[in-house]
Amino acid sequence: MSEFNVCLLAGDGIGPEIIAEGVKVLNAVGEKYGTTFKYTEALIGGCAIDATGSPLPEQTLEAAKASDAVLLAAVGGPKWDTTDSTKPRPEQGLLAIRKELGLYTNLRPVQIFNALAGASTLKPEVIDGVDLVIVRELTGGLYFGQRNRYYDEPGAGANGAPGQRAVDTLEYREYEVERIARQAFEAARTRRGRVHSIDKANVLDTSRMWREVVHRIHDQEYPDVELIDMLVDNTAMQLINWPKQFDVVVTENMFGDILSDEAAQITGSLGMLASASLGDGVSLYEPSHGSAPDIAGKGIANPIAQILSVGMMLQYSFGMTEAAADITRAITEVLDEGWRTGDIKDDTTPAEKVVGTVQMGDLIVSHL
Image: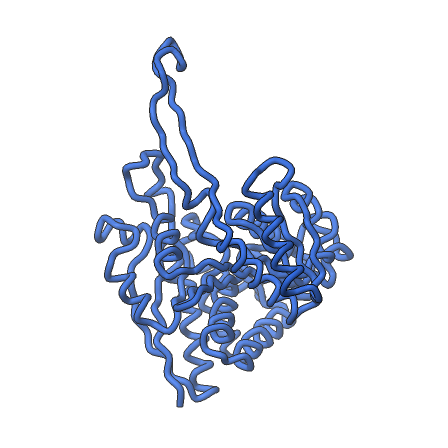
C-alpha cells in the first residue's frame, strides 16, 4: 500500500466547503486503489492574515515543503481588499507560496464536457471538440518585478499638489523562458503536437526576447512540434472566434492569468476548471476560480474544479494516472445524468436535478 502526505490549504470564502469535497473524493480513491492519504491543514490568505498577520505564515510554508503535494482551494475576499501597499493582501500568500516552492509552471486544461455544451455562451459548433491546455509562466513578469508608488514633483496633481506615480516592472530572464518553453513543447508531444506561443513582440522587449528564446528551444530541441506565434490581443479574440485551433498555449505570467480566465468561460463556468502549479519539487493544485465570498457558507458552490484538481494531483504528483482518469469518468457520468450545481444549470434543468456542494461530491464518490 502506498502512502502520500497532502497539505490542505482551504483558504477563504467557499474554500473550506469545496476542499472538503476534494478530500472526500481523495479518500474514496484511496479505498478503491489501496492508497493512504494523510493530511496536514494550514492557513493561507485572509484567514492567515486574521490569525497571524501574514498571508503565508512560516508554519504553512514548512508544512507545504514537508508534504508530497499541496491542495489549495481559494483565497481572498472584500474583507481584506485594500489599496494600501503597506497592508497584507490574501493574494500575496498565493504568490509567495508559488515563489517559495519554485512553482514556475501553471497548467490549466480547458476541456468541454458534452453535457455542459449548453452552459457556454458560445455556439455549440464553436466549442465542440475544444481541448486545450494553457501553460502559464508563474514566477516572473509583472507580478514579481520591482514596483514602487510615490509622489511626483509638485504641481503634477490636482490643484497644484504633488501627483502620484506608480511603477511596475515587467522582467524576464532567459532561463525562465527556456524552462517554460520546454514544458509546453513536452506537453504538446503527448497531445496533438502544436504550440501557440503568445506574446506582445510588436511592442515589448520582454516579448521580443520571449519569442527569440522560444524559437531557439523549438528549433534545437523540438523541431517535430508545430510552433505558431500569436500576439496576445489576437489570441483573446481567437479564443472566442475559433478555440478549436489551440492545443497547447504558452505565455508569460500576466497574459496567462487573463487568457486562462477567458478560456474558462468557454466551458460555461470557472467552477469547472482545475489547475496544477509545477516546478522541480512539491507541486500545488487548485481550482481556477476565486473564493466567491458572495455564496460562501450557503452550500451551493460547485466543487467540480476542486475535484478535478485532485485528479491532476493524482496524475502529476502521485503517478496515479488510472485514478485520475477515473475521477474524470465519474464526473462525466454525473453530468450526463443531468445533475447540476446552480452555476452550470440552464433553463431546461429540472429543479430536482440541481444540487449543492455536498450532494455533488457524494454523487461523484458514488460513481467512483
